[in-house]
Image (spheres, rainbow, N blue to C red):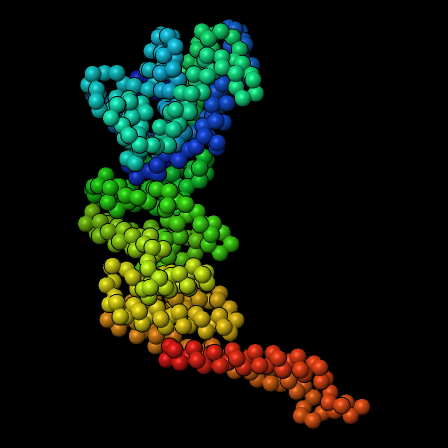
Length: 505
């Protein structure tokens, strides 16, 4: 693989008619004040104050490294901007542009016009040919963030609403204004030097005092592989981020309208609900990653380990991604099942579906049954309502029976996979009966209960009936009484077993 890596300042990165495009399928802007904006600004001010104190001499802190950005240059076109596709580092690059624009506006506001003009060269392509077009900006973010980015960089009066990008721009504006005007910080510290020197130092820092390791790929490099291996900086990527990047890249190769996919198939997967982490067993994972794992289990009728989700998805989806039509079909089915999954928590508990989700999945914590529930409710399968009710009733009975017997639930996922395999070759109009019959045929529960009963019976009379001790009294009277309590408990469980078996028979 051929890579060209250079340490570039913002001036070198954005000089000329440059236009860095973040693909529409990349995840949205997720950086925040506590973890990224404030630390970045502190680093910038550390360099700028070093310039002020040096007063023309060599500064103690001449520069700061921001990290890396990976991009792929497009073939040049006469009269057009020089286009680069950002493969990795979009969060960092977007933040840098927002920060420079915010500082530029404050510097201009404070009357330092020449400095403001120099900074403007780093954020705008001022040719009249690009006026009103995305190419007027040095960077154009993913589709989810474009309107907010344009508003932050080129404000309009008719804007309403909030966005993380706008919050970032305001943060840097407020911080720049406070530092330039010499407003004391929370600790009472005042910026060194005069405002003019501070403005000059801050502008110089943003132009030449920051460095990014810019990795430019040649046209034959595997950008997807680069994306996968360089995603450990900044905010970690989800499995769904890797999948989205792969899907949209394959869609572009197949000639599909990937911009349309962002508005249809992937429209809300980047919002907070899907990306929020929830508890699953001993771990916390995002809802979107959990759903993808369940979806693959349902589709493939096979267990899918968390660490293999991305690989298995690409293997399953690859044949569909060879043409735009088949890819669109797969993603349409994926979208429908995602909508079904999201609606589970809002189902009425008066319905069989809502009752099962509330009692079995949420209350009892048996998320392993989710792929089967998803299969039964999927719009892609159209299982009749009466069959859904039959299947879920039998499954809940089976779960309760195992719970009463205090049997392990570690193999529930395997049972769900067995049922899914059976359903794949069963007409949907008898799906519920198929589930009920399968569970009724399971004999492991019965065998375990009988084993317990025999074991407890033997324990109730360890020395044989009528056995006596040397003093003529029944042996282990007290111990036998204690075991008798356990025998009655086991007998109750065995009765519950037989009743439960009848429910699914």
